[in-house]
Image 1 (tube, rainbow, N blue to C red):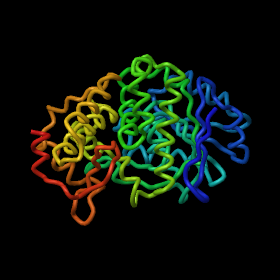
Image 2 (image 1 turned 120 degrees about the horizontal axis):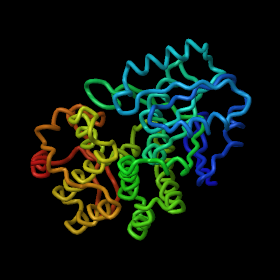
Image 3 (image 1 turned 90 degrees about the vertical axis):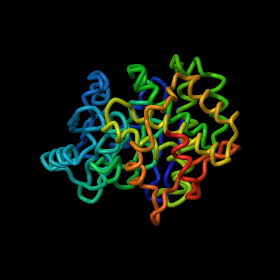
Image 4 (image 1 turned 135 degrees about the vertical axis):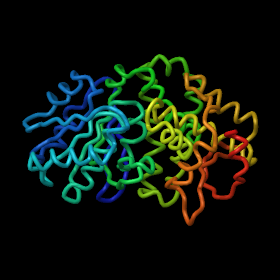
Length: 354
């Protein structure tokens, strides 16, 4: 088992990464002084996984609250239902939530924990590759609103993250590839070891080789935990984790959060951002081809031609990275390091998304 620390001070927490086993001792030790447990999950999680988690918890009153799967559940309506359940169960600050599912579950469970009684503890047990390498680490919690994705939320770290590759065996190809999109992001924003590993092990990654999966998860989390510990509330370097997200979120919003996974949208967003990096003179044609080929080698779609700038413009203009009226883009340089800039030629948007 690998243990990685994230956060600092009172908000510091450990991330436990295991193979097919589930660290029962770790979980129960963390729950020792807690009274009631509420597992928040969704109807996409196999019942055998929920049973496995409940059976793992010793000597606690465990309740389960299930949402409908999908981005549509990350809403004010679902948030209110979770709060109602917490009040019904008479939860207080000695009790704890467990987010057991993908990124949607983790985001809304975390936001509920952050705001119920001004903050109760919660544990992240992500069951998708996307949530394991991205949303379960870093304390970003949120719900979506009409104006866009993740615009209402809080920075609120979990008290524990447990990651097991056991849950990845039942993922659909679509959900698995969604997670691989975020893995590639870490490879492109500075983790050259991960980039080289993907290039050498693409077939094993496609085939979900267990030992290979554990390595790409560990490398992804090492990259993210290092960045979010330096910048917990996205005032500086943390912004580079949004590489591809300005355009990816716009694509998701344009699709009304349907018909495309988060990871698939972010992959297209990274292709757009890489092309902008080329047009802005930061990378070469060869490097752009290398980026696109890296994505293609593990089965990711890179064709964004159906999305035009005119369709995405209104969503891009409401991006969270706008400061003082200026959009801050995350681009990459010739050394495959990400950086933030508000100095770019708007005409290049039209060249890329024509």
